[in-house]
Image (cartoon, rainbow, N blue to C red; front, side, top):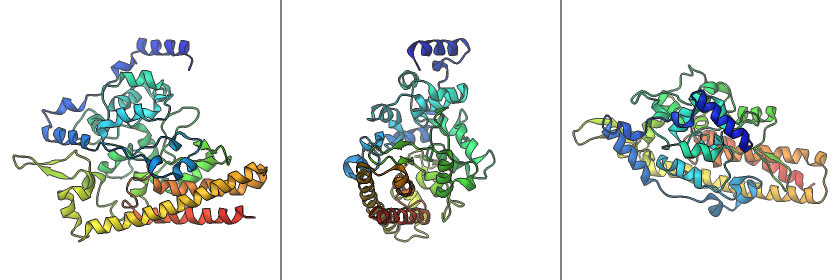
Amino acid sequence: MKKKVLVFFLLAMCLTGFALASTVSLPADSYKDTFPDQYQSYLRNAENDENYDYVQAHPQIAVLYEGFGFAHSYFSARGHEYTLEDVKNIGRPHPLANCLTCKSGDYTAMVNEMGIEAYKLPFDETFAELKGGISCFNCHGEEPGVLQVTHQYLKDAVGEDSGVNPAILACAQCHVEYYFPADTKATVLPYEGLENATPEMIYAYFDQLGFSDFVNPRTGTNMIKVQHPEFETYTGAGSVHKSTHSCADCHMGKAVNEAGQSFSSHYLTSPLKNPAVRDSCVQCHADLDEFVKGIQDRTEERTYLIADKLVDLTNALADKVAAGATDEELAQLRALNREAQFYWDFVFVENSEGAHNSKLSTACLDKAELLVDQALELVKQ
């Protein structure tokens, strides 16, 4: 949007009551007296301040995401306390405000007031208007104690009466796979109905749409960059706990204050680090740490093995392009490359390393390895 057009656009919003500054949600500290235990536990999320550099730790990423910002700047998420700081400082350009979708309760309120036009606002100007990051508003609206879906795109994707536990949906508002359509730049989930939230149906959705997040400059392959499909993984086929445990049961849990009263902790952490949650888990998993570690070690080992194969495929395909192979000759290889990397990425970017649903993660890795092996055989011909 050109500068002159932007000025008139912002002026028009002010005149019609849609000034950016008016769409500010109540910050978390507004409830510190009403819900002191929840508020103090929420502040503990600042303890999660480690920044893990995926690109430095895993050189495959620079090849597999080549042509996209993640190839040179990709860090693990820190605690919710740091969402605005991290999105501002990440080494990927932010032309539009849609990058703020899950970074601030203020921005969520802004989208709800303005509609999808908020996604096209310039990043810098919008960022300057935000007073805080993820807050009570994201999960509760203006009614703390009541779980609400405040992000419309989740309602659009799963329906108003999905039957999913509200304590799962609250987290699903951000821990999902999504994309930005080229025309609206809005945040959209790539399915309609929970039955279509499978990796296979999501891939078919993107294929039918002809969508890609980026094109690898050396191979010419139109790639999909999966985001963080915790919701789709946890509620997917093979999930053991989706009907009995919510995200909050495992990652928040109950705590007891000094007066002996129980409350829902808003300190988000691994169930392995929460004694109250561990006590529940060990009833079925006597050696919980080894059980989870076994799943995660197996998943990570396969993930990086397949990543190495995808790197080999990418380089071999790039060699064919450099040698003058035609688009027609490369079509099948590119299709296999695109699909294999999608299924690999579905596991790689999901934040549990297989623990949320080991059967689904294993199935995705099986598909990825089968496809990349087919492509590696084909590329030799």
